[in-house]
Structure formats: C-alpha cells, structure tokens
Image (tube, rainbow, N blue to C red; front, top):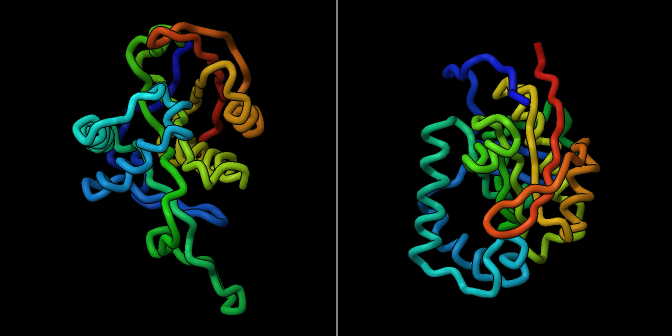
Length: 211
C-alpha cells in the first residue's frame, strides 16, 4: 500500500520543538552524544532495541547520532529528545506558550519521532518511502503514560506538518507494552515479518491531514 501525499516542500517539515501536556521534545543535536550514550548503555532499555546484552561503544553511539542528524537534514523530520516540561503557572491565564519557548526540565525521558523505514521494511510494507513512528523511553519513564502521550503528538506532526496519510509502527511480538501503546493510539495490527534476523509485528494507521 502506497502512502499518497504531496511531494515535500519547505513547508512540509516537522517543527524543531514539540510539546505535550507534560513533555517537551526537541530536535536532536550533536551535543546529545553523552546523553544518549548513557541511554543506550542501560540494558533494561537496550534489550528492547535489538541491542541484546552487548554494550554499545562510544563509536557506535556517535554513528547512531550522526545518522539521525543526517536524517533530519535530508528529510525535514526525525527523532526528538524528550524531557519533562517546566510546569506552567495556570494562574497566569492567557494563551499557552509557543512550543519553541517551553523549557525542558528534569532528566531525559527518551527519544521518539518519525523516521523513514529501512529499505527492507519498506519492501515488506509495499512503500520504500513509508514513515514509521519510533519511540524508546528511559527505564524510569516507564509506566507513566508518556509513550502514548508522545505518540499522539507525533501523529499530529505526521499528518498536519508533513501531510502524510499513513504511518506504520513495529516491534517484537513479545513487547506487550509497546503493542498496547500502538493499539491505544489507533494503529491496527497487520502481520508478522522478518527483519534483522528476528520476527517483528507490523502495525499501520491511516492519517487525516488538516486541509
């Protein structure tokens, strides 16, 4: 199934900063290298990212970040680093602050964003330019509903900022938490497929861009 969309223009780009009620996500930067080295060395997190028990090296982490920064440059969207946002003073009233002015507070919650699929996954889904919802949270952020909150915001970005009409998501079959998040934000299970020497489950969701 092919994603029907208007070719990307300068306007079809994801914002550098996005917010939810509790969180703020900002576009990755080169300065994030030590932040994500610690993230990627937590075995409780990496066990769900295909890293197994082998500890990631500084070079591998640097290469991962360089690839994600290049993805932003090439496609105009990508992964964000997510943090708790500074608490708003409700007594002030007035309109909410623009996303770009919201200040991150506290430790890293995780990384999540929109990404073009790997070529072999694109072949499986029938669209080499398909986009994928991706998220991975720090262990201490599990169980707070953050993944669903982030996912709903990113689906709005995919539809309204990028003009996409469809998005996929995938995980390993036994990742029950992730599958519940996908289903909770409207993804529909499609089938299993083989990727990187293990079985994955594919989910798909139709999007309705604003006219």
